[in-house]
Amino acid sequence: MIKVIILGFGNVGQHLYQAFSRNSKVDVIQVFNRSPINFSEEFQVSFTTDIRQLKEADIYIIAVPDDTIQELSKKLPLKNKLVVHTSGSVALNHLSDNNKKGVFYPLQTFSKNAVVDFKSIPICIEANNKEDLKSLKQLGSAISENIQEINSKEREQLHLSAVFVNNFVNYLYQVGSDLLLDNSLSFDLLKPLIKETAKKMESLNPVDSQTGPAKRNDFKTIENHLHLLEGSPYKEIYEVMTKKIQNKNYK
Image (cartoon, rainbow, N blue to C red):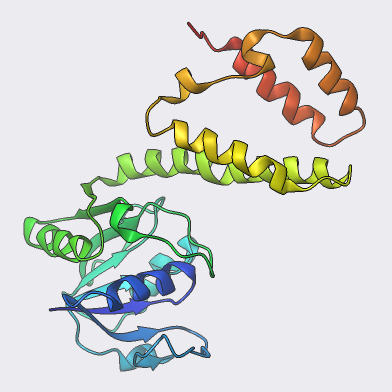
C-alpha cells in the first residue's frame, strides 16, 4: 500500500483524497493545511496545521496555489523523500532540492461540489529518476486509467491549451448567460447545444466541427449580432473571435 500525505486541502487536495480513499492500494495517512478545516464525515483522516508534525509517508503531494509551491517545498522538514506537486504550470525544478522531486498533475477542472470520475482523467507525471517515476505510475494507476509521462516544458504547453478550452470557454458561457439574463431568458436553453458541441470532440477534431456565421462568412448575420451588441462590453470579444475564425483556413 502506498502511504500518502496531502499538503493543502483546497479543491484539488479534497478531490485527490476522495479518489485515493476509495482505493485499497493507497492510504492517505495525513492531511496538512495551514489553517484549520471543519471536516465533514466523508473525510476520516489525521489532520495537522503544524508542518513539524508530518508523518512518514512514501509520497508527499503538494496541492496548494502555484505561487506558494516553492515556498512550501522549502519549509518541509523532510530529507530525501518523494515530494510532488499537482500544478500544470510550475516546473519540476521549482521544488526544493532537499527532497526527491516529482509532478502528479491531474488534467481536470475541480470545483468543490462537482463529482469527477478519475478513471478517465489524464494523470501527467514527471520525476528525476526511474524509481520515482515508477512510484508515481503506481499511484496514478490506482485512480486513473490514463497515465502520461510529460516533462515540464510539455506540461507548460498542455496547461496553456487547457486554459483556452476550459477557463476561456467557461467565461464565454458566462457571457452567453449574461446576454440571456438581460433578456429574461434561461441559460438552460443553451445546455443541449453545449453538450452536443462537447460530444462532437469524441469523434471530430475542432477544425471539422466548427460551424456558425463567421465560418460561413454570413456577413448579414454578423452585422446584426454586432448591432445587438452595440454598447455591450462583449462586442469586442465577438469581433475578435469572428475575425479569428474568418482568418482560419477551413477546407
